[in-house]
Image (cartoon, rainbow, N blue to C red):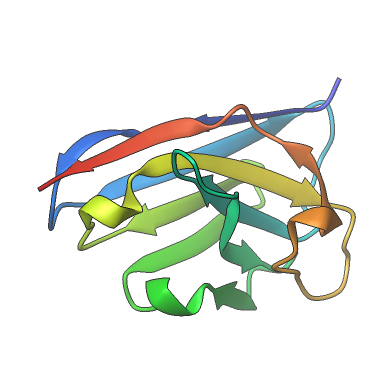
Length: 125
């Protein structure tokens, strides 16, 4: 059974930082693009960041560039999301996602077939 397990969420004040991690089991995704998405209450799930299988190519939602950074560790089969200068509007459930994409990456949630259960990030003002 394929599982993606997020960790690192929590409550932080505006301007603070959090680092989310995603561990996978049941399958290795070292040859596949992975991504983070988020969903705020009453809103659609939206793209946050994606990373290629090698980790050398990344892409971010335009509004998050410069504050968020995605990375991966192939030896540990994990992907992380460093979030800095957090704002109240970053409050959401953050989801790790894995794809079958072996070349490049995608910002489309339809391309991701494996999802974690999500981790709550709350940013207070």
